Image (cartoon, rainbow, N blue to C red):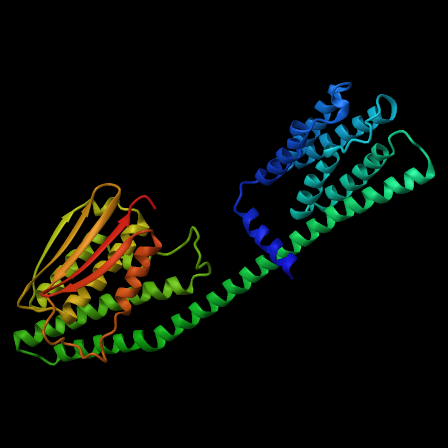
Length: 392
């Protein structure tokens, strides 16, 4: 279990590297012993040392060009076998280039190139057996050499099988999690349609029916118009949410529908929320010193969420007799939004009815983009400050 856990961690680490990086790193590590402790034959056969270094270097390119690299390693080892057999005696020095075969064998199996791995394994095993015999062609020498390198080659293949199996298990687990998330999202979308959407539609219809009955009170007409407009906006946002929840790729994709907070432009959302504050009796003002249209989509979406939740909190808990303000500024590197108002002595919503979930969700969105979101409530003001990096 410990070995499997280590392999699983290694698999996750390898998945984050560029293709071919790990192979080259191991190849360079194999070359270090040749530099620190040159073999004894280096003084009499320096070209053999160069050949071993080239074999290690060729193995390092297997991640980028597997067939070419694998063949170059095999040809290099074949040349080494010829030299060891007919030209010079390596004096039983440990030949690190022989272990370079681990790189193509493990990499080929890990990436599912089973045919290439099998062909290279047979080629490498035969050549390494000849090199290990070092010109001593006896039955005992052959059996010993073939057994030694048969075990090593088999071990390299086994490691690749384990890594491949762990990677497949991780992919299957991710697919299962994705399916569970998709099912949950569809369930939430159905619940929204059957509860909130239905209730909101009923409110709009009842308000429209009340207008048709001939209401003459101007204030009552204004309230009904506001209920109808707010209900329609809510239905539009709900439809956007349900479309987002029902799409097949919750982790992204080219056909991602717009977020419900991005159905309207950000500046329009700011104006709308400012008008709502004014309609509720607040002395509201807005100061925007940023090009809201040029913000990245993720930043604009998150900032819209913050604007909606912050102003909703003002409506619920703010003192209508005190001024409130919205300030949005950008210096090109980040955008900052500040919301200031004075809390009412007694909130219009009871403690049991009021929850901070909206602000919590807004803060999580901001932090997900590497920003900061803080709320301070020091008498007599309530301040929400959000900073979001633009380069995300």
